[in-house]
Length: 352
Image (cartoon, rainbow, N blue to C red; front, side, top):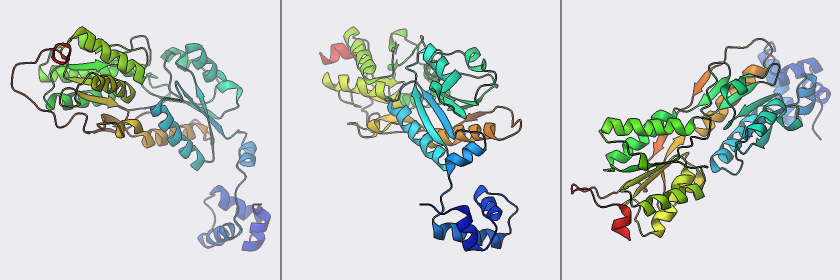
């Protein structure tokens, strides 16, 4: 069993209040006294009772992460980083999934599944900005993703437009001119796919390449199966394609699977790139070029914002944290044989 505050106080030769001040991080403790108390804490193996501390502060010590899909590799990795950050702060992370369903998102937003949580971190797919803001007296909320909060909520996001433009520009620099964008989702309100599509189009404009609506392939979900189905549609229509930009790594990996089944070599015949930098992409054959968001930084920024909202007082105004990203250039796009000959026939005609 962990030592008590009284046992630590007796061991260090100080009062129980002094030990409590050291454990709580209270500033007004003499450095020599703090050092002596900390040595006693370490020697006796003292562990603070987080539950009791939270109850004394009128809090549960629980925070909720509300995400569309727990099975998604991206959200799974992000949840792991958030759990690590929560543990550092003495919080317990409760993870709930919505499936992108508006009613489920609203229920969890209002009550977090019946749990008494101190705050929420949420990535909504279905609710509008007005829905998110209509929460008088509710637990503090930090927003992830592209659902804009108009400056009324703390919001942690990457620049999806710039990231998609950079990735599309990379594909163009490898010699690709017929780049399929697999991933528009006009049925969702979160705006992520729309911003990635905007960045894709901007890169085409900068390179003087035309927009071809046939190369913009919408999907219902961001799963491998959806990427595979999109690749089959491109093959079946015989549209000329020399690259695929999947708006998630799962979409890109599904497209790669079908392309190789049809005898295409990646990247010699078809360059493929994704978005999210999930573990599966790093071990694909060939490894997948992707946009890599700084997931640890997303977790740190989200919980930093939430901690600020849980501090007594009005707190600072809501902020929008822009988290960095970078391109991970791997073998699925490099090593292409760039030709100066006229454009080849479409994939369907060339490989069937």
